[in-house]
Amino acid sequence: MNKSVPVIAVDGPSGVGKGTLCQALANHFKWHLLDSGAIYRVLALSALKQDIALDDAYKLEQLALTLPLTFDTQGYDVKVLLNQVDVTKEIRTEQTGGAASKVAAINSVRVALLQRQRDFKQAPGLVADGRDMGSVVFSDAPVKIFLDASAHSRAERRMKQLQDKQNNVKFAEILQEITARDERDRHRAVAPLKPAIDALIIDTTSLFIQDVFNQSIKYINEKLAL
Ligand code: DC
Image 1 (tube, helix red, strand yellow):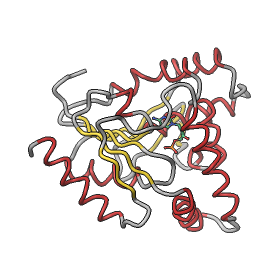
Image 2: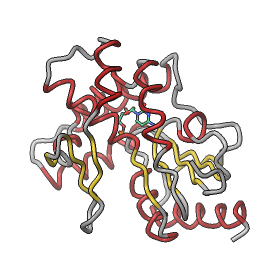
Image 3: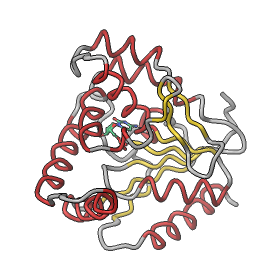
Image 4: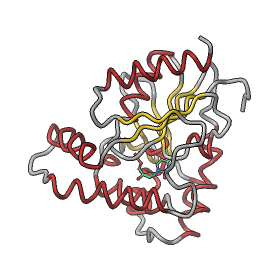
């Protein structure tokens, strides 16, 4: 791992707009992108497929250490492959998100996935998207941004995303799922979702993505003296 490679760590709860911001920042700087949530999602999906209980710390740790996961960045959109099979769409369901949040609460699983995430730190730079990028995985990152927003507005955004793909989406169910996931992610014993002390906090509740992007770019330019 090259210490001089800059990292922009972006954390926050689900549905807050991290993915969109990180993709835009990675495109802007032409840096690498780490979607750490996708790693937890693939682990959870793999466990579900193999009937491994989502609280079986030992088996999940073994799975995390050997997870045959690759990101295919050849095309326009990044593809997520498990055992060479494209699971990009499958990992985006609410069910897998909920399962990911459960396996992510296990300390040995988080430790097993640390190096895999740190390996993404490659020149010329990395934009890292997650829950503990600034607080744990890249705690020495020169730029840390924490996005937050009300659960209601995050559920509304999530609802719009899902409606594009499927019918019959119920707002109350999405809000409940988001609230339950938040509860677990914010209150778990290890690496709970919380801003690093030196993070810039942006409340995106009433902001457009362009405003969030502009605010972030201004901050990053100041911090990295670009
Ligand atoms: O960002 P996401 O919704 O794809 O993440 C799915 C789950 O994975 C999330 O509910 C908590 C967990 N996660 C985590 O614990 N740490 C990370 N750095 C990223 C995700």
